[in-house]
Length: 634
Image 1 (spheres, rainbow, N blue to C red):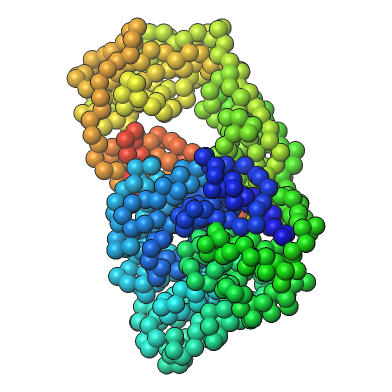
Image 2 (spheres, rainbow, N blue to C red; image 1 turned 90 degrees about the horizontal axis):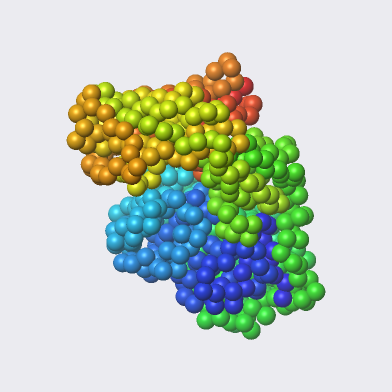
């Protein structure tokens, strides 16, 4: 059977997926199906096959289908896999894949009746933000998911009673950016009607009058109805109607009697603009005819689910009908990448050490690309994590460790597709120089309840100094300032808290050892001072109040070609994180962190929209992000 080398992603063979003790994120030869021991492992296997990294993930119930069926379009919008979990405990396979793919934010589809608060807590305990999208029933939940998607001009209308109807169109709706909205057979809510009137020009209605009545149908914007005598006939009717917009060379197949595998797979299918064909055992005549009629276009078949859902002999029959049973037609992973993504290739990537803490990455500009994603790993064959989004063909990786080798690869993107990874390159930061000595005689004095003054002896040959601060002597130190002189005033403190500082001298190609740690705050009175001794200071930081959202946020495009960001100070915040995206709905990448309340961004392309958000942070908590604001460059 011919198998799908899916663009820039690799499908794992069944044995690798189900028998491996770890999560293999590398490219390995494709198998003929994507499956796991159960629905949760199958969903994780689909995520592993389709996403090298993912900032977002959708989590739906693996036990109750109604709320989850509308999730595919939201998943596609956020380039997110769909994962499954039981109601009361986070599935182990789901937990593993969230960590393996570096997920930062999770959207839970459905209320506590289908996914409990205990699951959300388990996700948050992994260090992942979780938000619930839910209504009082399946109809309201679908409406809230649609609202979360933002703008769209077309929508799918379904009864929400028959999951096969929705699964037939889920990947297509996701590809086209259409929400899937549920309504009862004989009525339409005022909220749904208002949403359609405000945003939608065309609707696609699933099922006959028994599913969506003619009375409801007549109230919809430019409706088109799809019907069939059973699930499989409806599925074929939908796929045939949208075939001109689909990549028919790759067809996914799934059992029509089981929703979990198909739901998770719909997000993957949408990524490639390919249909999901529902199949029964034995293969239905309407499906068989469809496969035969499209055999000149179909080159690869990939099944979702294990043999209990879709038996090997049924898969063999599908391959024969689709004309892909000849093994000679199989292609190795990467052949399709070259033909489909050549125009988005990143070439001539180079990594150059700038200092003991910085590596400069540069590559040839690709005129087709709107942005680039930069990945970094600690070893050439290690796990690559998303580092940043770059809007120009260069990036400076800062705050690195001296004397360390880092490995990088870059991928180019347009608004609708992604190119292949570049070749892997490495850069090594110089080691700490013995000629750049440790800063000595570090002293801190408390000027008032909100300011500490830090000073130290100048270090010969130092170009500048980095000032680090932490909540405890042995805690995580964050760089808060870079100064050219041997003193610094930290005027962004909270009364009653303890702060710990250390200093590092930096030259063009080396850094000094860190200074000893000094403490400010705690039992120190204003006007008193503390000097660094042989050991570290001790003490703990007091609890902070909940951080607010920065007010007065403004984004201004300047005549200098820069973007100015400004906002108001937030009580208890010790620094601010700036997020940037080429789309209002994201994904957003961290542009930088600052301790003051303004920032200038000069990493811009002309005639391009950029969206920004600000988040107040301290060493123990983070506030809510602001609403996105944008500029369009000239």
